[in-house]
Image 1 (spheres, chains in turn cyan, yellow):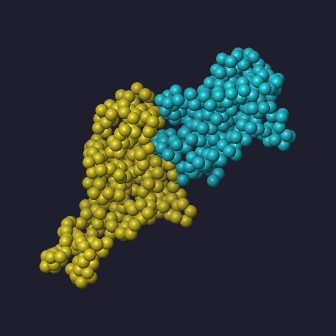
Image 2 (cartoon, one colour):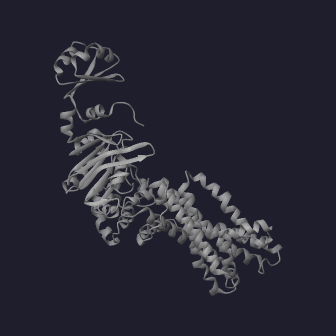
Image 3 (tube, chains in turn purple, brown):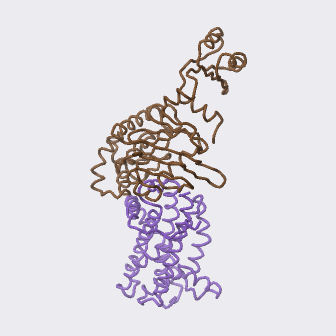
Amino acid sequence: MSKLFTFPRFSLRFIPVWQRNFLVWKKLAIPSLLGNLADPMFYMLGLGFGLGSLLPDVGGMPYLTFLGAGTVAYSTMNSATFETLYSGFSRMHVQKTWEAILNTPLELDDVLVGEWLWAASKSVLSGIAILVVIWMLGLQANWMLTLWIIPLAFIIGLCFSGMGLVMTSVSPSYDFFLYYFTLVITPMVLLCGVFYPVSQLPPLLQTISAWLPLTHAIELARPLVRGDIPAHWLFHLLALLVWGFAGFWLALGLTRRRILQ
Amino acid sequence: MSVVKAADLHKSYGEQKVVDGLDLQLEPGTCHGLLGPNGAGKTTTLKMLLGLIEPDGGNIHVLDLPVPSLARQARLRIGVVPQMDNLDPDFTVTENLLAYGRFFGLKDAAIHERIPSLLEFAGLTSRANVNIQTLSGGMKRRLTLARALVNDPDVIFLDEPTTGLDPQARQVIWRGLRKLLSQGKTILLTTHFMDEAERLCDMLTVIDHGKMIASGSPRELIATLIEPDVLEIYGEESAGWGQEHAAKLCDRFEQAGETLFCYTRQPAPALEALMGNTSLRYLHRPANLEDVFLKLTGRELRD
């Protein structure tokens, strides 16, 4: 048991795993990018203009700007989650891609590091897609500052792909992921300040919200769009990294148990 | 030097002993067959040799490298054809080979240099750039075999390489394996097909319940473990004939459904009795590896 959860062995051997996923992605890049962009963009534009026109400033900024910053984090989270859950499960369980790789000199640790970093990389594209919409609408206060959203998207991606891999490691089928969406992702979207400030929630929900990773992501993304250096940025970054790494480590142990026994 | 040397391997899952004191030794340039019914421990043994499952006891050397401690280095020089196809469905034939070669740390240029000969070996030269979803089962298997050779391995592990293939496709795989043997590669093969094992293998290890129950060349096993002549007697009446005559005329007999198998060293008396009975259809043949296998492991289903 203890052996399953030994510290991850990090090495550059993950690179061909990342490359493999990139090669697949390249073939489906256009529909994939459209998928990354279209859904969050319509939410953002529809609610931002539709609802935003009825609202005064929210959190000290126009609603569209408020929502745009939330959408960057939300969209990045979704991309990392879908990649590790559905695509990861296909590679692990359906296509047996991981088993094929394990017959080569790579180890399971290399495979999972590759998957983790790949999902985070892919989610950066989702973040950038929304960032481009923000730029086009001129929602940003300081263009240079919004560039920080790109590395931030990678950290958000690491956080949610680490967590997503945990679900993949224990899932018997695709249907299982519905639990994760209804019990984790949807509550997070509604409690962490994507659509409205967390301060509008009752105290108990605010307390819960403070512990959730998406809150930290939004606490970083929103000031960057508004043109401020985020308060307590180091704390929020660390929180995202701790969630992501804890998830990754747990997922690695569970996957070792699933595949290497 | 042995290519694979495993001694006293043990692996249990809970109470169930999957591999129980198994020894295995592969000599260079030979094809070694690992035979056994479903659940005998074949796949678990292969995974232990690859260092993917840690044995509970025993020790393993592959190409003189201790496994699992140096399994990564050993796997650099092993090719694996798994039981289930796990090619990349999103890739073309060439891309499958390229992506796989990268896992061995090969440079893209080196892989591209190697791909034409691999495609030729697999008879897939004309399909280099088609998506693998358009390939037949036999072509996919050939590609899986070619993929296992991308690192120019010294030893190749094949787990039921021809299961699910039609006779033509099996012949092509066999030809490929013989070619590899002629190049000096060593092969470890698991299979359910006794004709395959008899045809290809120099040495066989028959296992059941995780234990070795016989080993030797196919000829040795047939010569030492079973009566040389077999009479297969067909039809509903075979059982009745068996009760009346078989015990007297055969060394050993078994009824399986509507077929009676008579094993004997002296077929003449039984043949004479059968010729006098026009209502029975029968076949007289030399014993083969399948007879040995069924004698050793029984006729009951193993699921």
